[in-house]
Image 1 (cartoon, rainbow, N blue to C red):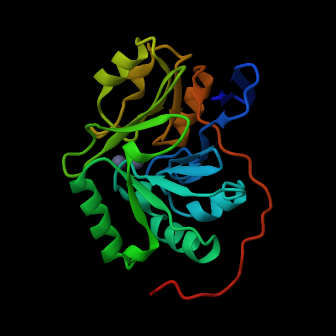
Image 2: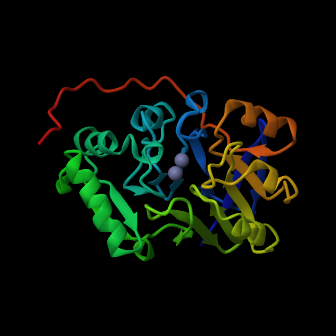
Amino acid sequence: MYNFIYRTVVNNNLIQYEQKGATNVKQLNFIGIGGATTIELGGNCCYIKNNNNLLIIDVCEEATKKLLNTSAFNNINKIYIILTHTHYDHIAGLGVLLWYSNFYLNKTPQIVYNNEAYKQSLIELLRITGVTDKFYNFINEKSLNFDFSVNMQPTSHVSYLQCFGIMFKDEFGKYYYTGDTKDIDYIRKLSTDEVIKTIYCEVAEETYDVHIKYEDIMDLDKNKLILMHFDTYRLYKRAIKDGFRIAQMAKTNKTKVSSKTQNPYL
Ligand SMILES: [Zn+2]
Ligand SMILES: [Zn+2]
């Protein structure tokens, strides 16, 4: 029988939506909530564990170390990766994660895609950075086997890259993860849609016309929004002060990183 708990952490208070007898947990665990230059907050990346499988959304710089430090790799069968787009703050740790997974975890991650052109661009990206195709596989989003569906929805961010937001759906509703986007109209539409339970929304002070402007979300339903990908630390502090929910960092532990030596440059 399908069981479900959806949890999110709000300003250090755990808010839990629980169904009786639930055994599975779906929770976005963030290892970074910053924009490209918000060093203090880290690159915007998160993961979900479901049925002992690990789904990682974007792979920031030092993602492998941060995932280790939050026990993300503990007791997992398979690793899946969704890349919302290929701006460096979202893929900087990709090669190392793929190598580490193969050499130290004996797992070959599966990269989720929803169209051939995007798949080919990721193959090329990995090829020119020295990651051969034996270190990863691809899986179509329709073939994923979680307790929720995943839909990579094209969004407008910058004209020269394919960019996606992610719509998760389960029997209780839908949950949207914006990726990087400038499509405020879509966020507004989702925020008034009853089926949408949560919107993980990127925000920026200085949008350069490619991000969601903080002022544009101030009148939206705060119960539905969880903010992330702040372009400045100042905005992060301001959003907390203004009563917004903030994507919370996963708890870290003191896992010892393996020091086995192997040559990944094969
Ligand atoms: Zn970004
Ligand atoms: Zn971007």
